[in-house]
Length: 209
Image 1 (cartoon, one colour):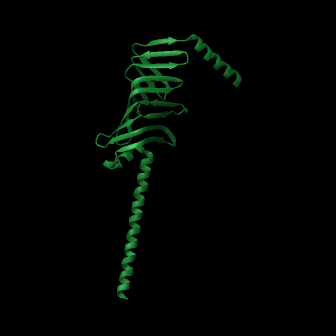
Image 2 (cartoon, helix red, strand yellow):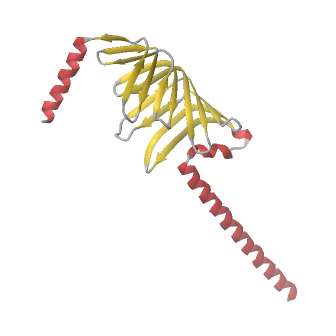
């Protein structure tokens, strides 16, 4: 009887400790899950060395229930010590507060991280940005989240309906929805295309009225 009681007592203690351990593990996992939801890039710090090469890379930032940006890539390599990810064939989408989308693609992206989130992203090779009906092309672009800005330090072309621009560098203010071509700016205008665009716009306004 004593042995049976001891066995039952030990079993109860073991089960109790197991339940406590499960609750502690569950609480830690919930805390980490919340942390990852606030900052998805933080999850990269918990990857083991053998898992630093990823296929079908995807990350996004959600702020106050609104999706701010998404980043996709065919594959990625993450380097913990440098806090840097190198992504092949990146596709970057920025969503402003007015519902406009900026789509950026390139051959390669270097993503630099700080302790909280994305610090800077550099895209290289056949960079193309689609923004407000214009298409921008360059070989190098830098996205700066703190300034909500995309900087093109090299020669950049911008083409839209009836308008083509070229400059030695360019800046795009995402929140203010402004574009600035800097130095050696060249402009080509197609009056017929611009006139047609204006006519179509006026027709749409008339129908809406």
